[in-house]
Image (cartoon, rainbow, N blue to C red; front, side, top):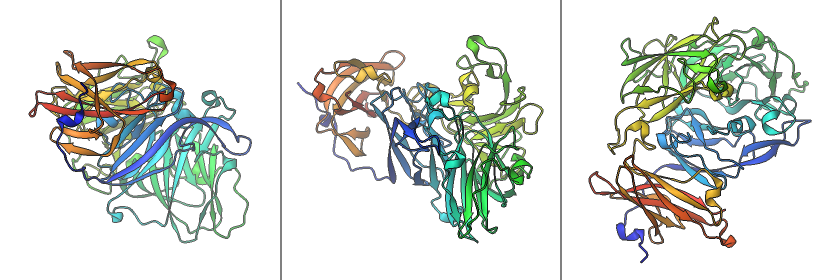
Length: 576
């Protein structure tokens, strides 16, 4: 007898939400990096380098459906947005990676305004380094919360390595192009031009300057600042800076970029041309004076435009030294945090509501030894700045300079307000791959579902988490696999399958229905073990005519919580 999901449910209205939807497809392709490099192999979102800019507004929910058309698994991380754990895009911790031919729907609620970016956090580390990166702009709900500007331009800085792509170009890119391939930014005299600098590189910290113009820094890592005028800006991997440029010096100017280790060599440049100016483009190798020797922005100058909801305190609940090191390690790794190498690390344990202080220091010196330290899931308040205790700048990535240089030691505080298990790592790809990564684990059980927060793929919502494999073989016709569930020990989970996904969730008394109950049939039943893990095996038909068929999965589970039943998360599965 076929059991239908509809028999469990009563009708309910669609949830009213402010939702912005995007589709992103990750696939192999080719790009035109500029003259001489017209068909370079790459991995791309929606076929462009960088990916199309995603736009949303503060407070909205952003839904991004990732389709994986790559030959290997992938996953998507939205850098800087304080997401729920399950949407953080970290394999194993938040969800498995998305297998080739499969998809995952990322839902980012209550968006925070500012400039952010997205990229893989995959075990396939070369994905970021071969084109998979894009920018997310979240406008403030009140436009008056932004400084006034007339034009708005995103400037994506990236390094490119032929060894990772199979191509021929190794060097640096601005908006996906070499210096010779740049599209000119045309401005009118008197305009206020907003530039959003985003460093999506794998291994390069940059300095950027606009010849002939000072820049007024208005935001860092999405957070608005009290304006600071500067000639040049250092920008670590993963960092973002928004600036305003008063266009009052007509001419044709170089938007020049160097590495942080050598300000006297331009590695890539854009072009800013005033309307009506007929001069030649600036030389790609020209080094503007403000790039090479102009006053460079320092963290100490920064102050938040808004007061911090939690000021800097002299008595945080936890003070944790973060010592960044370089030393031999088993397996060839040599970059460490507190003498430990990922994955053999001791997680930093915090409790919900704790004020935590990290004191960064480094014993590493010399070239390539700057460390852009990024904490997932939380904003930090940078200490020792012009903002003092009440207006510290809000950051998610802090660049720690080599030992012996200014900026080699910083302290931050943050309020542990987003339960889960969060990566904390250097964003330099080689450093991260070779050990400089650890975890911040929340104790307690925020959603009171019986699972400790750091071992819960969805610690802010009391619901079973349903996942599928990251292995492509599990979805080929004639293949076999399992639907995995994470929930309470000894609970019973009934997995249903439907050919239709609801455009918006339907709210019922025991959760959010995401699949069409009228057509949903029972796939199988799992009994979770003592650790709260359950699995429903399946065997796919051998009929090649079913290739491309897309099915939706959702479970109903027993629970010790009031009501006795609860709906799981949902997941699509496509036959290959």
